[in-house]
Image (cartoon, rainbow, N blue to C red; front, side):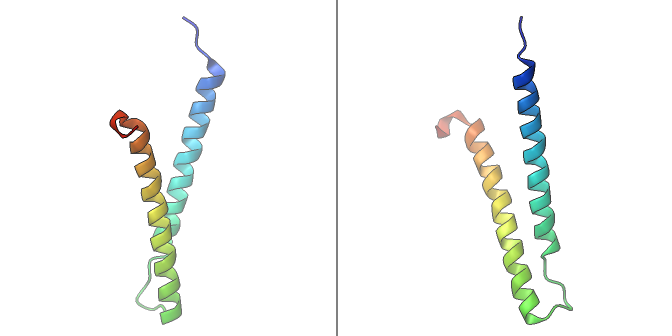
Amino acid sequence: MHLDWNALGLVAAVSVGATVAVVVVFALGVLGLPRPEDTRAHHALGLTQTTLCFLACAAVVAYGIYLIVPQFH
């Protein structure tokens, strides 16, 4: 049995990188949540940031499910 260690390392690196990227985007979304003391402009900007970040995370999750489930292909 032959293992392609380079391919395994590449898959591991991409998995870790994608996981870190999604966690950072989610954290930016949580950071953008409006606070009660925010002004109206900061409230709207924070809500927009939060919405875009959470939509990006949802898109990554949906794409992962698409790749895993064979009926979607």
